[in-house]
Amino acid sequence: MTTIRCGLLAFDGCDGMDLVGPYEVLLTANRLLVRRGDEPAFEVLVVGEQQVELYGGLRVVPTSSVADAGELDVLVVPGAIDLDAATPDAAIRDLAARSEVLASVCTGAFFLQRTGLVGDRVVTTHWEDTDLLAATGAAVRDDVRWVDSGALVTSGGISSGIAMALHLVERYADRALAEATARQIDYVWTEAR
Image 1 (cartoon, rainbow, N blue to C red):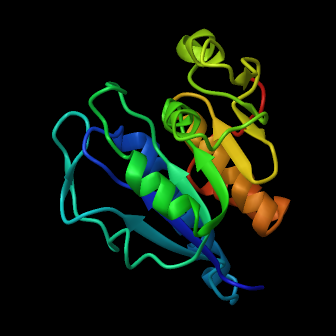
Image 2: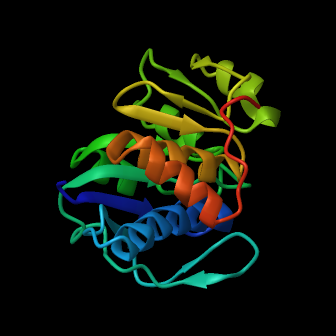
């Protein structure tokens, strides 16, 4: 299996679980693969500039700058509580141009929409914000925790990012690994909201 390069964008004001939830899923999938004697499937990068302060004050030091992230198979964009104050748009555009698949957690779908990366594809976001996202012209589903539209995968609020990351494990590796990962992190994995 070819290693899948996954970049998780860290920016000031992003939601911590939107970032760390998918991070833990991908690392756990790798750990399970190594445990059974296989190579890790995912190279996981936290991409951002120097040190970022997540919503609530937690500070994170990214493992790669935007410029040094290179080509990505998947870019994961977390959401933010204050969409107007968060300014990841330039980094998203830059990284999206070097990524095969764009993924978002929670209100991260708003950043993809406002940077013109959604187009006519179906998306989802936090259940509280589906009407607001639809008002921007996006085609929104509010009955599922994630939507896979091929080159765009979006998820609902906070813990749905974990569900979406498990879906990515299934998509790039297999269902058995995704189920084993969900079991390892003690997570009930469902698609329906």
